Image (cartoon, rainbow, N blue to C red; front, top):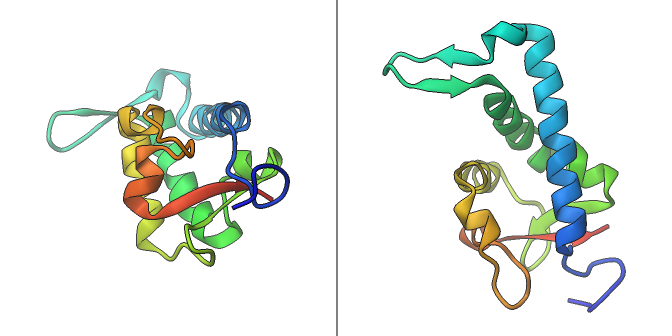
Length: 128
């Protein structure tokens, strides 16, 4: 992959900005549809699912395979693809999103600045 420009691996600044955009949008959507006092959704197992995080996960799982990135990724000029190039498929966005929500895999990077969530899913976030 090139060191810079189109097709290069996305750097932390753009990744963090895209994440902030996505989470802000998820919070707005959760507030608009569930109300401010309904931020916590009761679950059947007695655990609490936080509405913004749930909306964030749904947005990622829907948009990663359909438009090649989350809305935040696309706004920041990024796209997600397989390491060897091509469409990410349907199951990789689910794996990537679940690991992203756990947070730890997303903040541990290798020398190429790919998070463990991307490595586990076989994906890479590149500049469009």
